[in-house]
Image 1: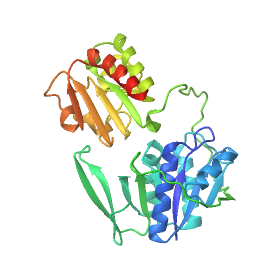
Image 2: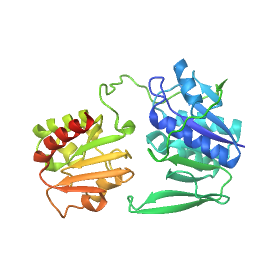
Image 3: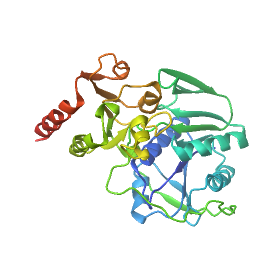
Image 4: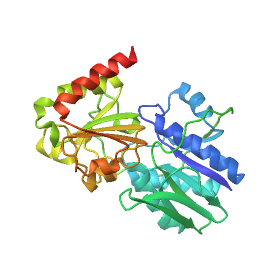
Length: 319
């Protein structure tokens, strides 16, 4: 028996959330007295293996020659082959688009229970009980899993990245897979900006920004803080900001260390996408705005006047 963790790479590199996943899997393996096995699909840069080893990886099923295109059906077949090979007690994935697509497939095939968006280490191992958010982040659920195989998807930014010593051993992994049905003709990747899924700090704007022309100060604040930019759904629907910045129940689900909401009222659909944030700071001129009920810190005021003051204050503090 073992702990199997599925690690994704982007352009041959392991991003922060994957190292978080690796650190989490390492703790699960130690607490349950199970060996840890890592599955990697696609070509990975040589120096990245040392980083993975420093976060707990020892045995790696290296599918460097497997198709790494966006086809979850193919990824699932590779995952099934890895499960058959190592017979894991736990399967751990990120609670991202890939994890949300693969975990149900594994559950159906192996009649395995799932804790999706698990928050930190289990409450109990025997019986297995995991903690997750429920009701759009307004409550917590304790989920008991009785199946032999437990499928866990880890909520982003819910576990501290920790380094640990170890020597990684790469093992060629070449299962027979179906031909991908998806063909990527062209890939336009965002460059020069911090990805929302990787950001520790996110500065987000809503309709209180009033128009697309008022986004300059928000972007300046985000740049000063080393933050990613985001927006509420009405903003992206109006075309003020690109759709990939939309966070919420129907957009990206994020969990940064700090989320700054500027001119966002705080509809329940928006809060569902940011409730995993460790600290929420809200600025809104309406003292009755729902965002204040979810915020750790709130300022009642005009964002147009307050953002420049925040930029000055932050730059002074940084100096």
